Image (cartoon, rainbow over all chains, first blue to last red; front, side, top):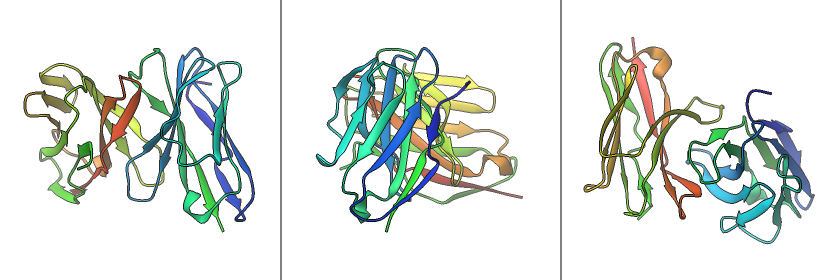
Length: 114
Length: 111
Protein backbone atom coordinates (compact mmCIF):
# COMPACT_ATOMS: atom_id res chain seq x y z
CA UNK A 1 0.00 0.00 0.00
CA UNK A 2 0.97 3.62 -0.33
CA UNK A 3 0.86 4.51 3.33
CA UNK A 4 1.20 3.08 6.81
CA UNK A 5 -1.67 0.81 7.77
CA UNK A 6 -2.76 -0.30 11.21
CA UNK A 7 -5.22 -2.87 12.47
CA UNK A 8 -7.57 -3.07 14.12
CA UNK A 9 -8.75 0.54 13.88
CA UNK A 10 -10.77 0.16 17.06
CA UNK A 11 -10.35 -2.27 19.93
CA UNK A 12 -12.44 -2.63 23.06
CA UNK A 13 -10.92 -4.78 25.76
CA UNK A 14 -12.01 -5.77 29.23
CA UNK A 15 -9.57 -4.91 31.97
CA UNK A 16 -7.05 -7.71 32.28
CA UNK A 17 -7.26 -8.87 28.68
CA UNK A 18 -4.26 -9.01 26.40
CA UNK A 19 -4.34 -7.09 23.09
CA UNK A 20 -2.17 -7.07 19.97
CA UNK A 21 -1.98 -4.10 17.62
CA UNK A 22 -0.50 -4.45 14.15
CA UNK A 23 1.39 -1.98 11.99
CA UNK A 24 2.34 -2.31 8.32
CA UNK A 25 4.87 0.41 7.48
CA UNK A 26 5.49 1.97 4.09
CA UNK A 27 7.38 -0.54 1.97
CA UNK A 28 11.13 -0.07 2.22
CA UNK A 29 11.03 2.14 5.29
CA UNK A 30 13.84 1.26 7.64
CA UNK A 31 12.58 2.87 10.82
CA UNK A 32 9.34 2.15 12.64
CA UNK A 33 7.97 3.98 15.66
CA UNK A 34 5.11 3.46 18.06
CA UNK A 35 3.48 6.41 19.84
CA UNK A 36 0.64 6.70 22.32
CA UNK A 37 -1.74 9.65 22.10
CA UNK A 38 -4.12 10.53 24.91
CA UNK A 39 -7.07 12.82 24.25
CA UNK A 40 -5.99 16.44 23.91
CA UNK A 41 -2.30 15.61 24.01
CA UNK A 42 0.46 15.21 21.48
CA UNK A 43 1.74 11.74 20.64
CA UNK A 44 4.17 10.29 23.18
CA UNK A 45 7.05 8.09 22.03
CA UNK A 46 6.91 4.43 23.04
CA UNK A 47 9.53 2.53 21.06
CA UNK A 48 11.66 2.53 17.89
CA UNK A 49 12.90 -0.14 15.50
CA UNK A 50 15.60 0.06 12.90
CA UNK A 51 14.83 -2.89 10.65
CA UNK A 52 14.23 -5.77 13.08
CA UNK A 53 16.33 -4.30 15.91
CA UNK A 54 14.51 -2.55 18.73
CA UNK A 55 16.93 0.29 19.45
CA UNK A 56 14.92 2.31 21.93
CA UNK A 57 12.11 1.18 24.20
CA UNK A 58 12.49 3.92 26.76
CA UNK A 59 8.93 5.14 26.32
CA UNK A 60 7.16 1.88 27.09
CA UNK A 61 5.19 2.67 30.27
CA UNK A 62 5.52 -0.72 31.93
CA UNK A 63 6.67 -4.28 31.37
CA UNK A 64 3.12 -5.06 30.26
CA UNK A 65 3.99 -3.41 26.95
CA UNK A 66 6.00 -5.36 24.40
CA UNK A 67 6.77 -4.66 20.75
CA UNK A 68 8.41 -6.68 18.02
CA UNK A 69 9.31 -6.44 14.36
CA UNK A 70 10.79 -9.87 13.66
CA UNK A 71 11.37 -9.56 9.91
CA UNK A 72 12.01 -5.86 9.74
CA UNK A 73 8.65 -5.03 8.21
CA UNK A 74 5.36 -5.60 10.07
CA UNK A 75 5.37 -4.72 13.76
CA UNK A 76 3.12 -5.76 16.62
CA UNK A 77 2.58 -3.88 19.86
CA UNK A 78 1.28 -6.16 22.58
CA UNK A 79 -0.25 -5.01 25.83
CA UNK A 80 -0.74 -7.61 28.52
CA UNK A 81 -3.28 -7.42 31.33
CA UNK A 82 -4.74 -4.17 30.02
CA UNK A 83 -5.66 -1.41 32.47
CA UNK A 84 -8.03 1.51 32.06
CA UNK A 85 -5.10 3.92 31.85
CA UNK A 86 -3.98 2.11 28.68
CA UNK A 87 -6.98 3.59 26.85
CA UNK A 88 -5.55 5.81 24.12
CA UNK A 89 -4.85 5.96 20.41
CA UNK A 90 -1.78 3.97 19.44
CA UNK A 91 -0.03 5.41 16.42
CA UNK A 92 2.56 3.75 14.26
CA UNK A 93 4.92 5.77 12.07
CA UNK A 94 7.62 4.83 9.62
CA UNK A 95 10.59 6.63 8.17
CA UNK A 96 12.71 5.87 5.14
CA UNK A 97 16.01 6.52 6.86
CA UNK A 98 17.74 4.84 9.77
CA UNK A 99 17.52 8.09 11.73
CA UNK A 100 14.15 9.52 12.69
CA UNK A 101 13.81 11.93 9.81
CA UNK A 102 10.44 12.54 8.28
CA UNK A 103 7.97 10.20 9.91
CA UNK A 104 4.66 9.23 8.33
CA UNK A 105 1.84 8.08 10.53
CA UNK A 106 -0.75 5.40 10.14
CA UNK A 107 -4.43 5.95 11.02
CA UNK A 108 -3.96 4.64 14.55
CA UNK A 109 -5.73 2.09 16.72
CA UNK A 110 -8.13 3.47 19.29
CA UNK A 111 -7.97 1.21 22.35
CA UNK A 112 -10.69 1.41 24.97
CA UNK A 113 -10.26 -0.61 28.14
CA UNK A 114 -13.45 -1.11 30.13
CA UNK B 1 9.07 22.10 31.74
CA UNK B 2 7.97 20.10 28.72
CA UNK B 3 10.59 19.57 26.04
CA UNK B 4 8.35 21.09 23.37
CA UNK B 5 5.81 23.72 24.32
CA UNK B 6 2.89 25.14 22.40
CA UNK B 7 -0.04 27.33 23.29
CA UNK B 8 -3.07 25.06 23.20
CA UNK B 9 -5.35 27.76 21.81
CA UNK B 10 -7.83 27.85 20.27
CA UNK B 11 -6.39 30.38 17.88
CA UNK B 12 -9.15 31.95 15.82
CA UNK B 13 -8.43 33.80 12.58
CA UNK B 14 -10.75 35.06 9.85
CA UNK B 15 -10.69 33.43 6.44
CA UNK B 16 -7.94 34.90 4.27
CA UNK B 17 -5.82 36.05 7.20
CA UNK B 18 -2.37 34.84 8.23
CA UNK B 19 -2.31 32.30 11.06
CA UNK B 20 0.83 32.27 13.18
CA UNK B 21 1.59 29.21 15.29
CA UNK B 22 4.49 29.15 17.72
CA UNK B 23 6.56 26.54 19.49
CA UNK B 24 9.55 26.54 21.82
CA UNK B 25 11.85 23.66 22.67
CA UNK B 26 14.29 23.00 25.48
CA UNK B 27 16.80 20.51 24.03
CA UNK B 28 19.56 22.50 22.36
CA UNK B 29 20.76 19.28 20.76
CA UNK B 30 17.63 19.06 18.61
CA UNK B 31 18.45 19.73 14.98
CA UNK B 32 15.29 18.84 13.08
CA UNK B 33 11.79 20.16 13.51
CA UNK B 34 8.44 19.23 12.04
CA UNK B 35 4.92 20.56 11.85
CA UNK B 36 2.06 18.09 11.68
CA UNK B 37 -1.59 18.84 11.08
CA UNK B 38 -4.14 16.67 12.86
CA UNK B 39 -7.83 16.79 12.09
CA UNK B 40 -10.19 15.63 14.81
CA UNK B 41 -10.27 11.85 14.95
CA UNK B 42 -7.47 11.49 12.40
CA UNK B 43 -3.74 10.81 12.63
CA UNK B 44 -1.01 13.46 12.30
CA UNK B 45 -0.11 14.49 8.76
CA UNK B 46 3.34 15.90 8.03
CA UNK B 47 3.14 19.35 6.44
CA UNK B 48 6.56 20.95 6.97
CA UNK B 49 10.06 20.08 8.08
CA UNK B 50 12.88 22.52 8.85
CA UNK B 51 16.48 21.89 9.73
CA UNK B 52 18.32 25.21 9.32
CA UNK B 53 17.89 28.66 10.80
CA UNK B 54 15.67 30.91 8.74
CA UNK B 55 12.53 30.46 6.71
CA UNK B 56 11.31 27.60 4.56
CA UNK B 57 8.33 28.14 2.32
CA UNK B 58 6.01 25.56 0.76
CA UNK B 59 2.89 26.93 -0.86
CA UNK B 60 0.82 28.76 1.73
CA UNK B 61 2.99 27.46 4.57
CA UNK B 62 6.19 29.00 5.91
CA UNK B 63 8.19 27.40 8.70
CA UNK B 64 10.65 29.51 10.67
CA UNK B 65 13.46 28.29 12.90
CA UNK B 66 15.62 30.25 15.32
CA UNK B 67 17.99 27.89 17.11
CA UNK B 68 19.51 30.63 19.27
CA UNK B 69 16.07 31.39 20.71
CA UNK B 70 14.96 27.74 20.52
CA UNK B 71 11.88 28.83 18.66
CA UNK B 72 9.96 27.35 15.75
CA UNK B 73 6.93 28.84 14.07
CA UNK B 74 4.49 28.07 11.28
CA UNK B 75 2.75 30.72 9.23
CA UNK B 76 -0.29 29.87 7.15
CA UNK B 77 -1.15 32.51 4.57
CA UNK B 78 -4.64 32.99 3.13
CA UNK B 79 -6.12 30.77 5.82
CA UNK B 80 -9.04 28.62 4.74
CA UNK B 81 -11.76 26.90 6.80
CA UNK B 82 -10.16 23.59 5.74
CA UNK B 83 -7.05 24.63 7.68
CA UNK B 84 -9.03 24.32 10.91
CA UNK B 85 -7.22 21.57 12.81
CA UNK B 86 -4.73 20.99 15.59
CA UNK B 87 -1.14 21.77 14.63
CA UNK B 88 1.55 19.75 16.35
CA UNK B 89 5.13 20.94 16.62
CA UNK B 90 7.73 18.18 16.97
CA UNK B 91 11.47 18.05 17.56
CA UNK B 92 13.72 15.15 16.72
CA UNK B 93 15.37 14.17 20.00
CA UNK B 94 16.99 11.15 21.60
CA UNK B 95 19.96 11.26 19.30
CA UNK B 96 17.78 11.84 16.29
CA UNK B 97 15.63 8.77 16.68
CA UNK B 98 12.33 9.93 18.12
CA UNK B 99 9.92 12.80 17.82
CA UNK B 100 8.97 14.78 20.89
CA UNK B 101 5.68 16.56 20.35
CA UNK B 102 4.06 19.57 21.87
CA UNK B 103 0.44 19.35 22.98
CA UNK B 104 -0.69 21.06 19.79
CA UNK B 105 -2.40 24.34 18.98
CA UNK B 106 -6.01 24.26 17.84
CA UNK B 107 -6.59 26.58 14.89
CA UNK B 108 -10.05 27.75 13.90
CA UNK B 109 -10.48 29.62 10.63
CA UNK B 110 -13.77 31.46 10.64
CA UNK B 111 -15.87 32.45 7.64
